[in-house]
Amino acid sequence: MPTPLRRGPSAAVLILVAALLLSGCAAGAGPRRTVLPDDALGTPMASSSISPSPTSPVVSPSTPLSPPPSPPASSGASPTGEAPCVGGVATISGGASSFTVAAGCPRVEVYGAGVTVRLGGDADALTVRGERNQVETQRVGSLVVEGRTNRVAAAGEVVSAAVRGDGNTVDASDRVGSLVVAGNDNTVTATGVGSIDVSGDRNTVPGR
Image (cartoon, rainbow, N blue to C red; front, side):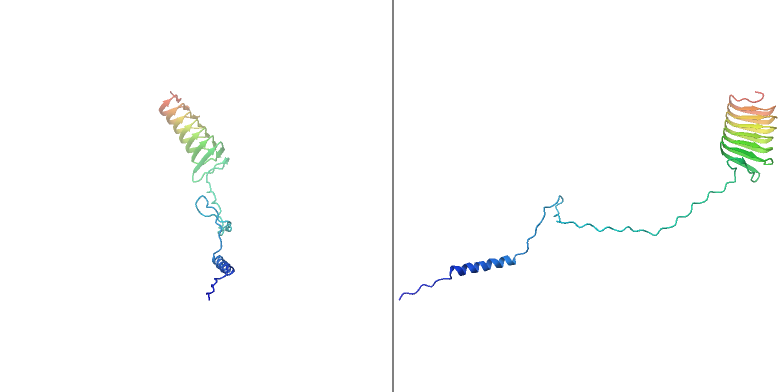
């Protein structure tokens, strides 16, 4: 008797086995990722950006400001009026102002430009420095004028006078004991002069 042929698995069974194998491979695969194109620096760009949280400013405790220092007290003359005589000296400085000095102040000093001063009495020493200052006085022991276009009028004797600068004027109603002039275009008038020392150009003094 002939041996019957053994048939292999049917085609349906083979297809079922193949389908099971494919489904198992698909289940083991990992999830897909989507990567955006790199930016100019070569770093993958994130699909979304996170805004940084605002930082609250740090406020330090406020420190109270110290009050500004008070200006130092001035012992000189006020802008106008009578100049005080402190320690036997009246010091006047400024510009385009008028002052008076009471009689009995032995030493008067004037500094500035365009200051007008009237002395109520004699002065042992009178100093005028600056420009365009005008001083009226009585008798003067020692007179010093330095600067430009200053004018001193003395209703009395001037024991000694030194004039340095340009264009200054000293007008004495009495004589000048000794006179020194250094500069240009200075003018001194007096009833007489004891000794004279003049240097510079175009200076006018008594006896010259």
